[in-house]
Length: 158
Image 1 (cartoon, rainbow, N blue to C red):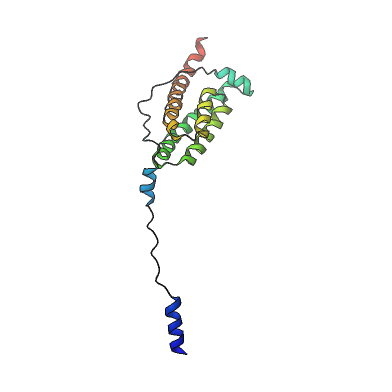
Image 2: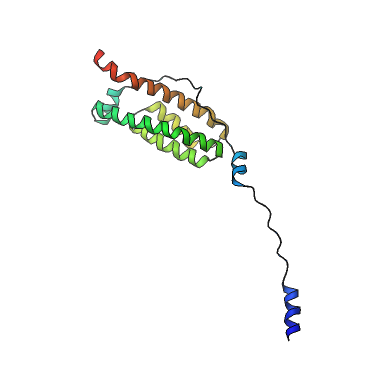
C-alpha cells in the first residue's frame, strides 16, 4: 500500500512552474510617466476677477471672500506638488481627483477661468493634453495670485 501511495504521489505531484517576473512599481511608473512637469518658467496669464462681484453673487462680504481666496491660494500652492508627482508617476486618477477638488473651490469662489481649466484637467483622458493644460492653469493661477496680492492695496483708491 505504501508503494502505491508513493507511486500515486509521483504521478500527481508536479514541480511548481515559476511565475513570470513582474515589473517593479518604480520602473512601471516611470514608463507610464505623463510628463516631466516643470511649472517654474510659466508666465502669468491674466483674466478678470471682481471680488465685489463674487461677494455679491455669493451674498457674502468681500472680506470673507478675500479670506476664502487666501485659503484657495494656499491649497493650490500645496497641490502643485501633487500634480507634479502624479505626472511623474503616471497617476491619472490623482490628477483627476486633485483637478476636481481645486475646480470645486475655484468655482465656489467664482474664479471661473481657473475653474474651467481645472475642469478640463479633471476630465482629460488624453495624456498628451495634460502638460499644456497644467501650464495654462498655473499661468492663470499666478496671475490671480498677483492680482490678489495687489487687490487689498487697491481698495482705498476708488
